Amino acid sequence: MTLFRLARYGCASRSLSARPVLARRSLATAKETITKLEQVTGPAKAKADTSRRKTNFPGAANSYFTPDLVLTKAMEPVATYQVMDTDGMVADPRHEPGVSEELAVGIYRDMVTVRSMDKVLYEAQRQGRISFYLTGYGEEAIVGSAAALNPRDVMFGQYREAGALVHRGFTLNQIMDQCFGNHRDLSHGRQMPVHYGSRDLHFVTISSPLATQIPQAAGAAYALKRQGEGRCVMCYFGDGAASEGDFHAALNMATTLECPVIFFCRNNGFAISTPAAEQYRGDGVASRGIGYGMDTIRCDGNDVWAVYNATRKARALAVEQNRPVLIEALTYRVSHHSTSDDSSAYRSAKEVEEWQRRDNPVTRLRKWLEHRGWWDADREAAATAEIKDAIMAAFRRAESTTLPPVEMAFTDVYAAPEMSPALQAQKREVEALLKKYPEYYKVDDFAKPE
Image (tube, rainbow, N blue to C red; front, side, top):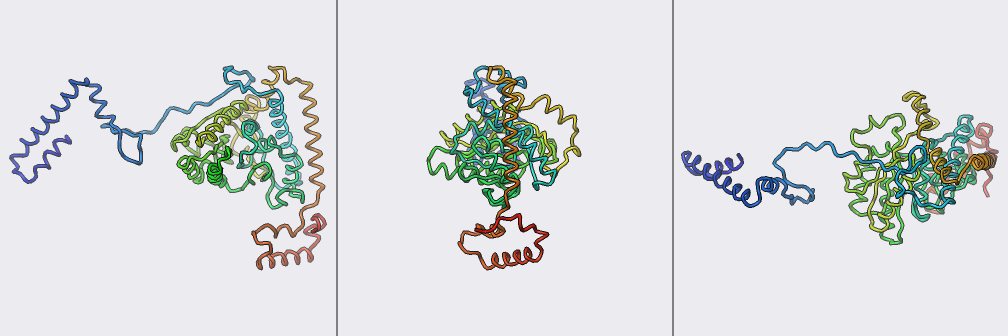
């Protein structure tokens, strides 16, 4: 039909009676060409050669031509990498993590520490002793990702990565100081609870707005690439943050500039109260990485060794080949989103209890340790008591520590050593209020300026 059109419109300057003759000649020529091709290659190969010719368009270099109108909607589901099942049994010995007893037990203790700490601080908020809190119940296997990194790798967190920070060396005292916002807090009380940060541990301070850390991580990775020090960036976020535009901008930047960054998505099934089924229609978050031409791994986020192995592989690709990697760790958020949320409004208690019973990442690792003779009931009891005592000691110390001096609210705002006129005016206004209403502002709770 196409050849007929070309023949028809190609003879527009000729007489109408000549057009059918030329059309028949053009069709005959086309048929003759196809017949000769079939004689040489066979009918199937001839069809393939005419329908699989590679395109030359710069916008999609790997595409090919086809005479078929194809609506591409589905792809093969991305497989989920798993090392051990819910009973702590490893199906394929080739994927054993190959870690020492010391490291394995240390990871387990960190997971137990975070779980116990979450319980104490969540209850403290309910009692009005701290202002806000977010737990990581059900997502403790995040510790495995930190164990697979180099201590000098840069971390960007969201707000359920306390386990990764604890494994890197952030102390219970530092966590408690931050949640209480006292004068020992590294940010001097300027951040809301759970927004940790540590220059010494290469952990960038957490920011409340969703997904802002993702393009920042891509940019930081590009800087590390230029420095050539063999370091990478780990960027944590949830499935809700992956629905923000910043996520897409960051992935595109990282792939085109070949940045050594690992994008680690904790897909726990909920963006606050929005379930995954209402967030997207594609195959999770992993399929988006593939769409950007990025190496992508989907793993069981409740399996600490799957998380560990996936991160080790991703880091090798990032550092050795400057290839960004997206890891989607499938897990389940057992807790409420935060102390400002009541998840019973959008899911049943039975669903939560079933996940806790059936697929608990802490229990799974404990069983793995027990299978190897590295853990038992006596060690469990001793560790639980020791960890609880350490948490409560840090809690009491932080709660009894005075708040930062009021003046700290006006320092470190701008790089200039002196306050701007606007800040000076605000400071005078606050001082006047404190002097006029000391009983309402509890001025004795604040440390005195040095």
